Image 1 (cartoon, rainbow, N blue to C red):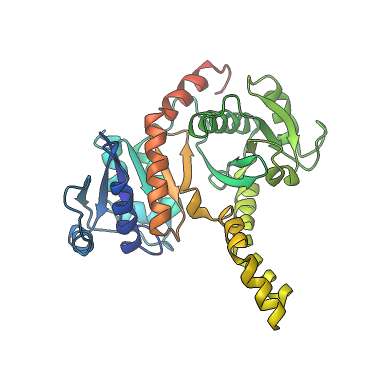
Image 2 (cartoon, one colour):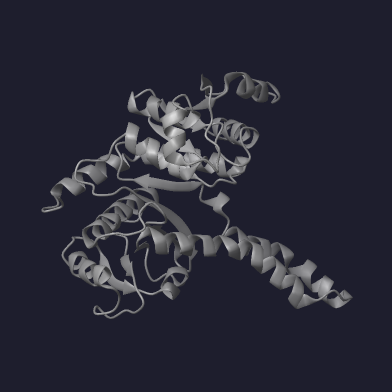
Length: 337
């Protein structure tokens, strides 16, 4: 059975929301995976005991005496808190006691722990984080969304390769369309790094469709959109803001009179369905691609539903052997050093 470590102490709503999400995930396991909760054993077990019908569920607990807070310096915290839930979870993965890690904790600490404990896949210049956004064709996978703020052309190409492999195996779409995010479709547009990357992508063996603009992301112009982490992080956080802005805009547009309130009531259910498209809980978490293992970086405000979805995503990454596919593809590249 696949074992998935879940950082019980990471996130704004930890540990209660994390434990609740782990229970939901375990109930959906059907023998496919076991959830290993990593954190303060007494606190986690007390939360487990509050739930009915948890006996027999594929859940276990591994003790970690420390936790890294969301506002701590990742580097300093990882040095000082060697028994933190993030490091213990990654240590279990590095020792092959689990096959994946899910954490909604301090993102920098999760990245640092993954690089320190799991190491990079040989040939990978920089691991990258990817995230889903809704699009007219279903979903779009954006990579990188925050782990690398300045990326060389060769790194952007690797992001495209890793994102394409992930999308292929997780979304079950062969040869997904890969686009390079730019300020125009023409090959000569953009900064020097992006222009040079364009030439590399043309010969990279991907289903490269060329440059794509911001409007093409939601418009379904590409399945995988490649950019550096600075641009990607701004893009993803802008998308998150829509779920807060749109309800407010709707309420302001319909007004407070009787007709407006009635109209709001009639369209509320359909509007809620639309908002779900931008809800991070629907997508679970952001995969960290390029390390020797499987790691999902969940949203800091993750709810039980988000954790449940992230565990399912982690299971699929392990089951589809995404990291093995990335390693083989990267090794086929020449001149990546």
